[in-house]
Image (cartoon, rainbow, N blue to C red):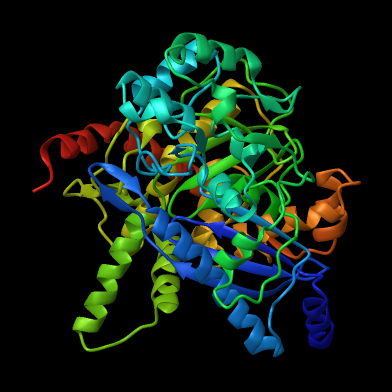
Length: 531
């Protein structure tokens, strides 16, 4: 097997996927059978500058190069050869956000990530104008905010993009974007597989008449899975490989968002399929059989990489709340003179959640590291509160932290299932929330009231998902769902956890407590300011 992989690498038959996550940039190399054969990663963190969650251009370029070079080193160690040629490549990143450039490619305003909840008025205004749900995270919400604030840079605006589209441009020179990522910029017409023309006209006439550009002129070109988003240039190859071994010329698939790579990694692109990505943030995606009857502020309407309608319930906060607590518990262990590896600490604590009372014993907590648009918060304050008579145990505490991390997302799902009658046969999970066997699945199944499946390959994540889209360039004679069914997942192993009735009842009780207690969170935001 190793010899075959070595030959495929040497012959340039392998494919690379690179994904920019919230805390890690990961690069994955896959062989002709779509198996990951090497990987590399670079850890990074967003920073809050003047109230804006952001990463710098230097961060982006450094992380891109570092993740590729780590992958290249992994190939050297595992196979004893130098990576020089690849068949195809793909780039994905955190969906949504705002990057604005002038004609020379200079960034005009700090990159705003999905984490920023500062465009509520603009998102609501556009939702009413378009009759289409527009989220605060969407690129168009941020552009409108700057138009309304009359930002002087707008006279020089030449290009607007997401992070994935920007990185693709660094590597190819082309201003393109995958349709799924584009659906986090602006409404998509699934008939034309492009930006909705009526909405383009409304925006230009209402807001852009005083500027020397029209929306289509500054937006990247929309592409479908299977189309080519450019070719790796000499400059792009040099940016990736500081040692100069990588050859230019390979095609890149359309750059996509992490939601779309999650669909790929969980085989969730056909109607009635769904997936949930749970890590720093959590979002559930359900591929729709028909459009929703109306616009809901709690649900985004996006698309699969081949342009099918998808309803997304997106929450800004997930594992960050209990990550901080687990770090504190680790300090306690060390203060007592012991040491414990992080995976053991997490597995031990998370397993305790299965021993807790169904409703967490009356405990309540909020892991709002940042704001939460679904519940109406532009910023957050992590907190834990309980009645003096509550059953305050470690098991209930951990269980409450897990439950609360899914409550905002569940708010959106309730609308989708109860008001719109959407159907879902299975929810496929991936991300850090599911690393501890059975715990994450059991909690998610209770929250969504749906069986939760985790594929054996789910740990490969979005970098593998975008690598699959790059591989699909060689299989575009098949539709995307058939490609996944027959080429990628034909013999995939998975585990499935059905929802337990007691867990469902307990989650529902906690969920009611969560919404009743939002006034506590609001008071914390109001009265606990920055020093």
